[in-house]
Length: 206
View 1: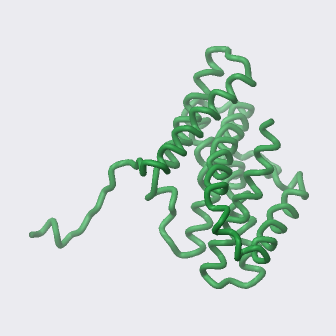
View 2 (view 1 turned 135 degrees about the horizontal axis):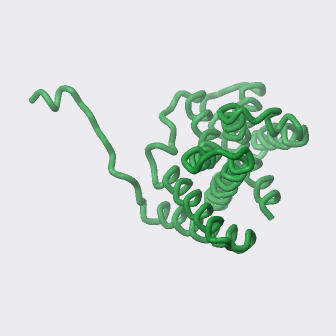
């Protein structure tokens, strides 16, 4: 199940990257690059951090065709993309959870300690979006809008807790997905977010 959700997720992320590139008036190469990095950047950064070589997508060339193809296809259907906004939010939430669980599993398989496993899950979940926003010259959305990175953290902790309790893997994934998806969609619906730190030297001097 996880692999199918992963494929859907990287396709949706690639399309979101293409839309971000379009807002910056990028050419075909720019759209393709941003789509690719948005979809597969999180896993790439994770593998480099953990010393997990070869990097996962280098062993699966179809992922490259899928993400770049999704990005270029977005250019052709851009006129109707606004109608699919809600669907994209759900797919993005599912992708966040899938990426987080995959990241945790990779670190667990390499024998890393709990804090590293959690950070591996979060990095896989959010770093593609961070790369997209940095390259498009905007503050990463995952750090300033509704609960997003926090959802990844909660999913990672829940998944690892259920693993430690010996819960069946399929039940664990279903529970993690249900909880993570519910929190993310609720955060979007009711605009839940963490407290914001706003610093202005002028204000503090007055």
